[in-house]
Length: 477
Image (cartoon, rainbow, N blue to C red; front, side, top):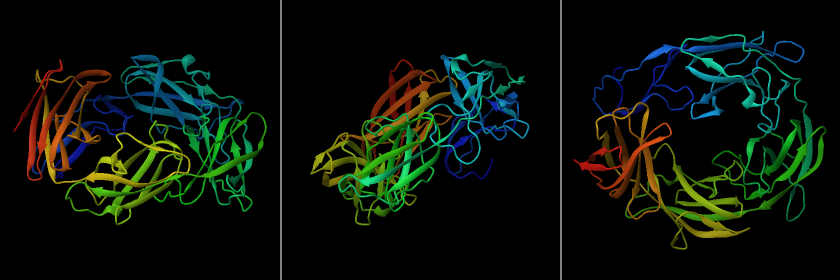
């Protein structure tokens, strides 16, 4: 390749029906990671490819007719956990004969399935039938699935599955009311979650088919599969956009569908707590375009879902408002838009006090005087991680993260490329603690930390020798 701009890249060898040990089809970023500097020539980034294996078969319904246009699920068994295979991303689906063919597979042990797992999805869309997840040869239990053993270039044929009758679907109806006034709420969008928790903070299989309440606050959801659900409501702007500024939230309305429709579901909308604050730059830095920044708020316990995650656009003067928050511990973070190269949150303050991890919120509380302190700069840190013996094992991963001395939050992380090199850009000047950790698969190879100083001018360069026995030396150039 020539005329490649400077930057950070993943280089992969991808060709139909072939596989490369350096490229993982199940990872979003796969291949060899490379940092390219302006005018640099890099050689010997080599890949080895072999012809991939194939799995093919036919899917039929309970009457022996072909099942058409249904997605095939592929699973690969991990050597470290032979009983629980990992899902492998694939676009394979059945044709008009019910035949499927998956090619370009690595050698290994696989299982094949088709259909939906119980409680994985709430609503069936369109007229296409849905089936309970069935594994080859004909079982609903992944531990009873027959293993398909593939060597390089193998072709496993006649991997056929006959499905049970399709799932029957039902309707769920109810209404949405204001919890304070008990008045109906119109134009509220209804969401369902499967495997719900009682407090509404943990959800799985979250979905909506666009069902909304009418002028009487009533809703009807069609094509609901059997299972246990929580129903939620949202009003205001689009739930998943940066314009999500509803000041209300709903507790879950739990129900179960077995063999009949469910009626009389009542969802109560409550006015949530709110955070009003300001985003400011640390020290004497001039404010870039603050309106390019998003402020997010989400539960500190990790129970994040589309209805507990809130975000808002910062105003031009740095002020922001986030409403509709449930009581509990809330974390605040920021994201920058395309016009800002790197904006880093340093700390969050409430009434002048640093909040090291989260902000405690009670029901209906209106919290003011919150400041999110951020930083940006022009400093560049460029470095390389070298193994003490000069060799890292294959498929190693080296992670590098930075935290400014005296601050609670990290300022970003990256991974070293195939040559062990890494770069951080747009760093504010100051002293930093750098953490380096190397691993291969689930095995930890070594780690270290060291303190470095970053200036606003020029580049800071560093070489780090990582001893796999955890003894390291950092040499600053």
